[in-house]
Length: 128
Image (cartoon, rainbow, N blue to C red; front, side, top):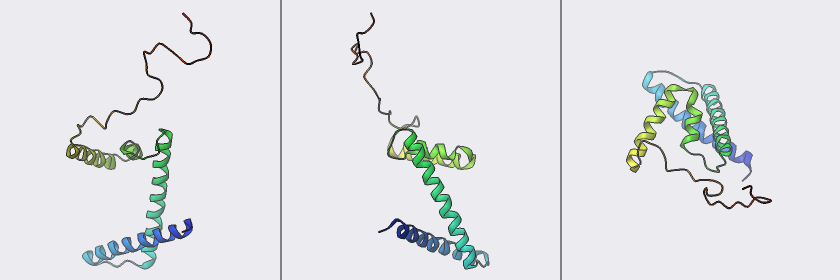
């Protein structure tokens, strides 16, 4: 399936979901939303999702990772205090359910050579 076709299918699914949500809210509040409004809202939400996903991928790549993790999401939320507070609370709840402490995720992998071996693989002789 071509990328353009995938993108159109994603937009159609988003349009359907947002349309359903907006219709329910309009019924509850005795309002009316035009198809043009739902289309514009769909485009706005799609653009926001695209920008957010690009930012998250960039943060993970900068950290030399292939997988996006909670650190990337928290970095993304740093300019929105309300969102950051909600995400931190949710992350703490998730960690508590998983049995992890509030101190954070598992210790990150160490990179490079082990320290204290005293033997390097550099060029030339070691200075004494």
